[in-house]
Image (cartoon, rainbow, N blue to C red; front, side, top):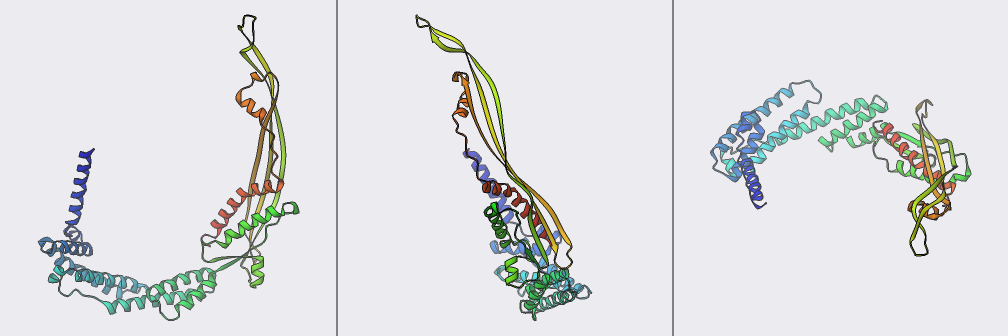
Length: 378
């Protein structure tokens, strides 16, 4: 075991040494000029007189700089509306190379004045923001939710390039509220006062789900009360009602078995020898099953057009069971499991309100998954 550990340590040390000793020559040969410069800088920081790294840095930096400047010049001639983003990227790469070289004294002997384009980078960020801002305005002027959603992301991108660009923050807010879909959720309907408390609990679970919903920022859910208090005109209405439900359907099954066991000690002779014989019993096993089930209907309707956008049904079932037994005859004919069933006291079933709540649990899971799926990319 000790030998294996030494071998593993040696292999790891060699790998680390090989990685740390790279000079960037292979990257240079492959035309990855940026990588060749960064690797050469890293090598010279650890070994300032490494001849190969020095050669790679001198050659690689010039090639990298010319490559980025060529790409910038080509992009400036392009008619692509977002060309300033690629220009910005190349200026950033040039400046990163300069920062790395400036952090390496040995590198500065080879490249005394690495070029930085600070002003040019800031200008490219401004123009990149301007292009995205203009695109956002065009989309927002189309006056529809889909375009407003795209406009929001355009303004968001513009703000990343230049946080203070014009009134980009206000335009983001304007686009967001133009893109938002306001969904009012009506209370769950159940045509029975007997199950009101259980239905209220089910309703609370739904309320918690929509209150914490964050999958799509452009969807806002409101209860009917919230919509009324805030004077919200909905875009959609989501209604839920139990189309059908049955609580407490009871079934009792009885299974009768005739049991016998041979070679059971049933007594003794006068000279105290054990007498073996057969014992018999009749076992009655009872199974009570209480089934509750329901069907929840989901309908999503467009408020203005009254068009039904989604109509789904979600079934749920809960089955409660209890088993017990009784016997007649000799209990020695029964197994330990049979005896346990005979000693088991019949349980009281849950109240109807609990049964109602239990069959709604699988319905709730289906419901929230369906709502999440429908609004995921809405």
